Length: 450
Image (cartoon, rainbow, N blue to C red):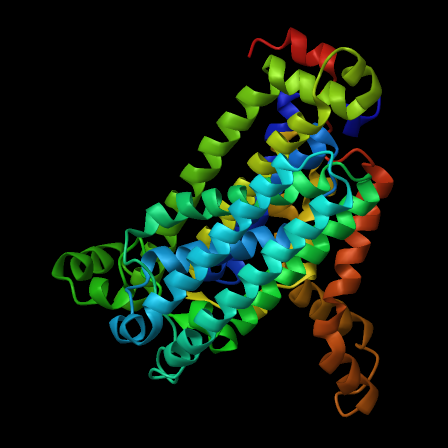
């Protein structure tokens, strides 16, 4: 049997040990600050990869809208933690609430009309369209002046409503809940589609979400960004002014500024690692349960599962909502780490393509593989620039330092990141087509003591 197809605990331990060694090398030869920064982003990427692995590895759902759910989690982190802008609320907050109320009432009324007029043919569609259009027109008359008033209130520093001023860790839960809620409505519409249509639909919806975030300044400040999002850990300046921390850094033998930066990153690491381990435990329990085996049976043969009385669409909706909620949690964690909500950073390369690469490289259908893939891909994504510079230095050794060709190659070395990532993906697909930690078969799962 091929080495890469042997799914043993020893192999899992060895692969994670190698990954830990790579991070330690960064710490020793570059800096510990950089190592912890990479580690924290690896943990967040692993959480996202875990959520996508639920959807694809368990149920075979191709979600191309990961970016949108991550952005929804980030929005929740901002709305929950930032303090409300009182002046903006006085300027147009009531109009926003009234306009949203009109939209919600219109949607509920349209739904009830749709249900009550079942079997009425085209008349049913016309009634629903009429209700939705009238509700939208009335809401715009209310929302328009309110939005203008809010965005005109101190636009350089606020120009939006702010948030609720609640604890930071609560925002992670709310981020998952918001992503799950949106995923429920998206799933009700799209999960009846074929896999290729599902991918196109989810990608389009995620682009719509990002478009709204970039243009609705009253909600997100748009491209002006929301900064100063509260932290769940101490600030460096507070630690540097504390006597106990000054004594601690002196005892350890490093400067208080460097020590404060390391301490903050370690605090983030402990929080992110705790979330990842809790989610991993829950996902493993789900995988080894009858529900998990049923999901994989549906994935492998929907027709047979449906013939046995399983509601395939309902089960797909369950896993779609759960996976999206996990991605939303990761999105909220990322915004908390960055300390700002910036809608312009959400693009498919970072928040969709790379996450899919993580799942493929690690091994879809295996939770440990998804986590390992998150670590490996993000590590290479960060270190690819350094690797590219080293390769260019070696290749241009025969050229003189004054050579314009050598200068050109050195200047374009950072652009080798995409090439290196492509090579990494090709190598893994060639030598480990099922991923580094492949999925366990159902027979092995049934024999597992867990």
